[in-house]
Amino acid sequence: MPDENFMDRAKGAVMGAFIGDALALGPHWYYSLDALHRDYGNWIGGYTDPRPGRYHDGMKAGQLSQAGFILHLMIHSLIKCNGYDKADFCQRMDETLFPLLDGTPVSGPGKYTSQSIREVWRQRTQQNLPWEQTGSHADTTEAIERTLAIAVRYALQPGQLAAAVTENTLLTQSDETVVSMTVAYGAVLALLIQGHMLDAELSGKLMTLVKNGELPFHVVTRDNLQNPQPGDPDPPRAGRFASPDALLTPSYMAMAAADPEIRIEPAWKVSIVYGMPCAIYHQLPAAYYLAARFHDDFESAVLHAVNGGGQNQARAILTGALTGAQTGLSNIPKRFVHELEQSAILLKLATDLAADIA
Image (cartoon, rainbow, N blue to C red; front, side, top):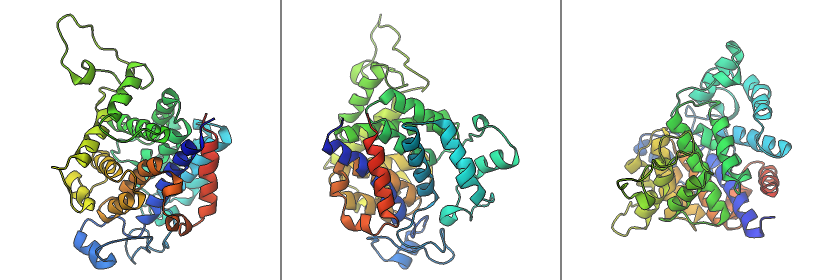
């Protein structure tokens, strides 16, 4: 059985995601930083109400968005089934979420439904398509925001992690690059829960899992990205993804965070460096950077994610999970937990999920 520190990190990853989601509920999707500062001041330091007429209008500080609602569904499914069960998760989406939607953006839990979920709702409720045909070309992080719970559950089983995350991601997103980046995030989160650091060495550890056949990426060069030599055999192709690049990204972001000659000040401006929009290729570099730079400071990591504007909710969820997995729940400031709506229920979910890791 995993030790107490391992369990603390697993719970920290789950609660970090929920906290990041709720922290960004109020100031979500401000692409004008002047407007963000006008409405919330120069620094957002806690949970806030959404402004009238903005995203999530009518919600209250400390509540979860629809991303948090779906993550909640995923964790319930994982606990009930003692692992990932596609049929059970899909049934929960059909019976619990979809009756609350009407196909428009401003609807459902959290008072906003993302484009990829609206598309699946239409395919399931209006076109009666099977779940095997519902994936779209959305290039966003919605799959990470729910499959991070799968990564927690299979933190010691990288092969099962990759298979389950892939299967679940394809329900909403069919682009292979998006799938590979989603699986890579889950693999990173699992190593952090195990106690590894988000540093320059992490990608090498991920590549070792590839070479052992445990992650479905393939190697395109020799060790340490050295060029092949005459007579070298074709590198092994362990799985479906075109290259290992999604596994290499985290360590480059960690090196940037550690390099004294590379400074992003204040750190929330990482959103400007890597981009404010929703696409996964903007979100992941920023989350990796913040989680590496503030690896032992959950508050700084998640609040800089929130204060960067744009799609700060996804950035805060991803950063919150990665940083919570490094600090552990015990080092997440208590106010973030206590001021989170239904915190006792969410803590029990995190605890029960962590207890199922084998």
